[in-house]
Image (cartoon, rainbow, N blue to C red; front, side, top):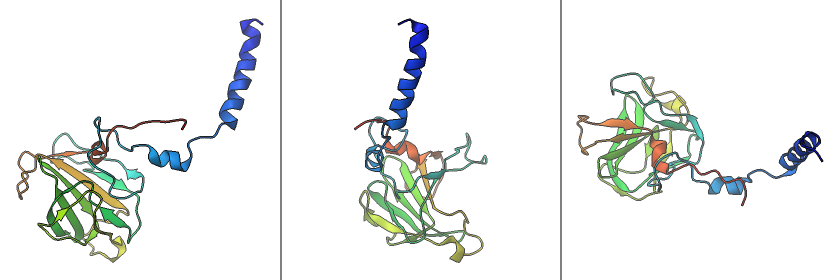
Length: 184
């Protein structure tokens, strides 16, 4: 058979294989690590939802941008610490209930709007429930209005109140590399 004649046969065969083959099952998809970061994940997602608004970290802290990732979640859903650490803040910022966890080595993560179950100074473990997602329709007018969880991360934190030398990072990079697996 010549190459010219085999091309249509190859195209039909490939179409059949791709059409009839199962894709990723939901269980296989949940086994796939979910972040574009370094070689080993150091954190876990604080909620199971997908990214609905990715981070858009500005070059300078004072420039406009989105300093974190918004993850799909519903009011009342549990919010978990992405890694072990010490609660540095559990309270309200401009009407938005917020929890910040210091993970050591200058890394701090922030979760909002979260009705806290922890207090400043508490030690938390990775995956520990730190609060539940607040219903933004019940918050003061000054509070953030987006739905879902806003998860932020800052490097260069000294654990105190000063923001000198801090820089925002995309928290999704803490989850490890993206791995694509087509078959089990």
